[in-house]
Length: 246
Image (tube, rainbow, N blue to C red; front, side, top):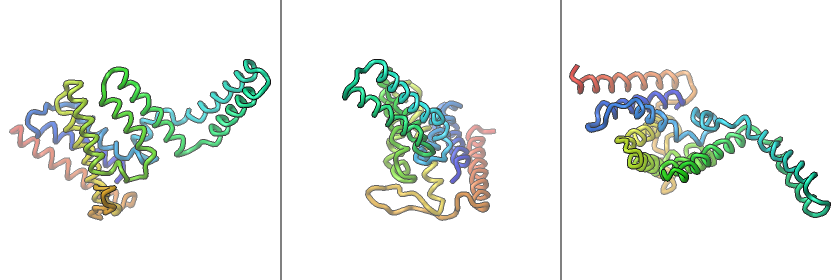
């Protein structure tokens, strides 16, 4: 399913949680969190919306390697005496330069997301928020996995919900776990409607659960996604309005 459809379903799910679950306050931030969470499983895909947004440094990663190479070369030339250390310095500088020059496409994306995740992880350790460090670790690891593998499992959904639970405790923001977990689960449920399906219990089994209604990217698939989003939205709107008594 396309990222725009996942985002729409995630936001609608956030509205459902905010408007229908007793004790959960109606929160635009919570709805946005559900939408964000609905995109998280596709961090393993190079073309996903969240990969592009979180990997904000993609265009600069390769040039960072080239800059490091130039800096090492200058340091080696001016600071190291002739001998083995000097040769090693130039060799390392050359290696960094070649890696940077050759890097493109998916490898750049993965490194950018790794950098983003590591920054988040360190920020969590610095502030004492374990949930933030776990979120950073998730962002670090997910891009290096195959598409629709471990991020599209019941265990990943549970981990994401647990991160939300820890954020709930740390921030005192009631409902974070529900918004995060339901948004994440909405992605897996939506992908279950595609021809590829979802391996919910991997690695215990490679069985792919699917209700093959949607062929992602096809004209008929796009129309069906639109219909599902519209129908789901109307259903949630009706339920929320009914609960409010309008």
